[in-house]
Image 1 (cartoon, rainbow, N blue to C red):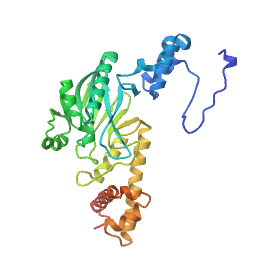
Image 2: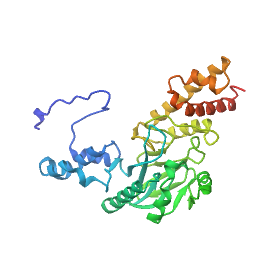
Image 3: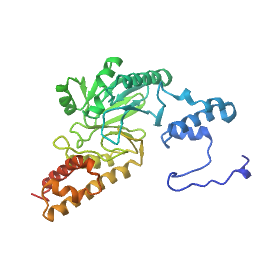
Image 4: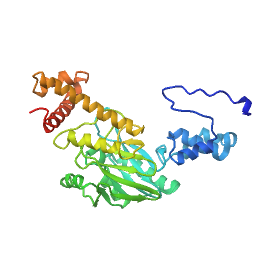
Length: 338
């Protein structure tokens, strides 16, 4: 439009954080430098408009299949972090675990969790397309932790790709009796390069003793595994789970420089620090309610559950009870109860 005919821009509060009129190429450049997050249709739209314009690019806009990675849409909210959701036997309400292709020309596959042969084949097809179209070659498989919905397809992927499997030593220890061998280990504060992406490994116990997160230090993208979920709360199940460790790990992630969270379940979460603080505050709030009920004379989990988890459906009370036990252990460690 001529400057005098540009329509007035209105940014509606809620879904939108900001808005402006911008050329497609400039918007695409902002995504490439991780200033903005772009959903798959928007990324394709900007790419086509920047390359061909609205008229010549119309056939490509009508058929976005060119942007697909094999049987999957290319879901790359931030550069260098491709999300591939695979069906797993995970806890409701989740039905999938997010498997990630992280990095540039040298990349790693994080948490191939599906045991289903059809899902494994689809994942391999997506990786082949990422290699051929984007030049991203898998150099290794990394695990965030040992739970079945994160490791179910690890051996099949290792055999198909011919790459090593890496995890925290505590994860390796738990997988060995199950027949899954870890080739090498990853350590807290270890720094590696995946193409042009500098990645820092963070040990974040709490949900699992060997839990790891992976931080792209260039753009602040954090693959946070099961530290948070976009769909539900995180289960802390003693003795493997430890509430004190979990809260300390959340606090460490707040200080890590993470900008955007890529969880194992559900979509990307912007404003990492706010989300992580909300998780800490929720756990502290719940612990306060437990302490209040304890001081009123309640002791057994069966007595405490209706008082402190009354908003939770009875169907998930068995899981809530494990959280309650974890909170009680934490309160004892702090000297709040005996």
